[in-house]
Image 1: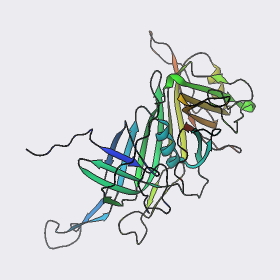
Image 2: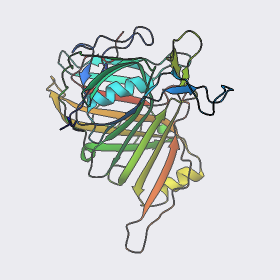
Image 3: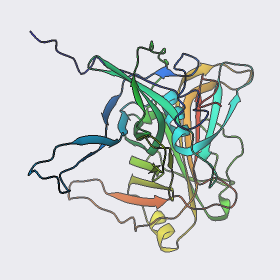
Image 4: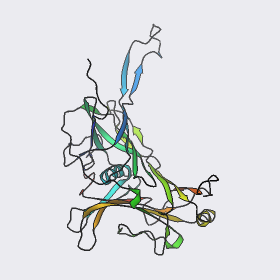
Length: 357
């Protein structure tokens, strides 16, 4: 009988703690530089470009020669119950700039992640996947899109589209350790919304308190049904000359961030924000299990997602059937802010650094 392989018997590790020194150089996959992922789904492909000779005059009806012109690697990674380590690592690969700070002298750290400045390259790393008994290392890995979403009563969900240079090689490297953390539940998520001159983004964020207002912002968490935030780098591969059949880099196009969410309909407040085209800001605050007890404030696994400037793009009109509680849908886009980054993602956990040089 042939050997059968099981879908659950896969292993994946990502170099979330160390970036490539130069694109496609690879990373030593050790516990110091990488971690094994857990509780995820992955769909991947070798999206190679294959060329044959059948389009030319060759004297035969059918082609007679074929070769791999360019190697490729793409993957879609998902966590239906997202963990802070995954959010920080893939968030850093997606956005690119990070400041990590230790809380007091504890094994507790906060990682403030924002988009890299224009003309600054995104970091790249390495992935290693064992699937069906085959273990391959993939270099030059960057994140093209990052999606964060959730529904009331559930967990923060993460989906990330990953692209590699196409460099791949069989490997027997031992897999790095897994990171043990609590999932991020939406029952612990607070959401605030502010408009106009009262928008004020705190330089130092505080867990479980609003950080976007100098006044009293609107409270959305008691009405929030679902949300979806998507960051898109619009990556484009650079084959150029001399790459030997793999990409020499992946560069971003015009980046954009979009937010969609659904609230229980209450009154015309948000509709007025739309009709007046008010400048708005929103904050999601996720707080999980305790990391460490501080001298005055305890620190928890979790994250902040802040969009400092947005406009409502669509009239949030009430919708629903005869027996329904009315809801309203909202669509927004990250806008340029003279003071703050287009999006701020701050993650709290026990890891000291991500994608270090």
